[in-house]
Length: 185
Image 1 (cartoon, rainbow, N blue to C red):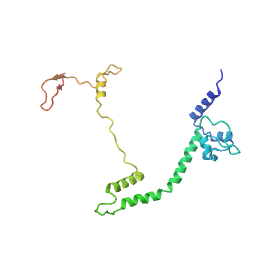
Image 2: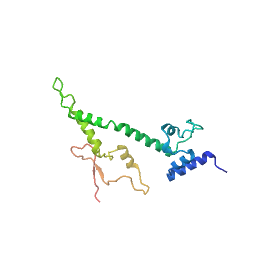
Image 3: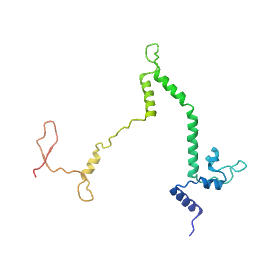
Image 4: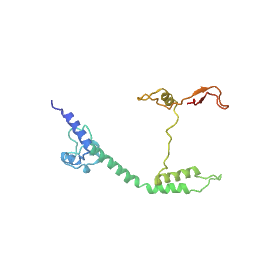
């Protein structure tokens, strides 16, 4: 029994994804135009224009990874080009905020110390990187303790540590609960 066209397309797409093959050369052969020469609208539509400038035929049902990668590359380049023009102005503004020593009519600073501190921290974080924060994820969990008390490992051993001993009633002065004393061995 033969596979349908759709099944073959899915099979070929999975095979290409596994081998991570660059299909840009295949796209250039099929569409007679290299992917790098496609304009932005052609990338959005997933195919190049026909020779008369229109988009003929059915819209592709899926976008190849190569087309998607080219879209992302161009968007990053566009953002880098456009936003890069504001970098010098942004740095001058941050510098002006950090060094502003003016005071208002009541003697209070126009730019508060916390704003100046935030601007300084922002610059340090951007250029030096943020400090690594260590997080303790071994917090006490009562539900986990309860489950550990009743669960048994596959080898028959308890899933928690067992302390042998006996409960006695003579409690410590500052402790209201029973005290566990080790039993003599």
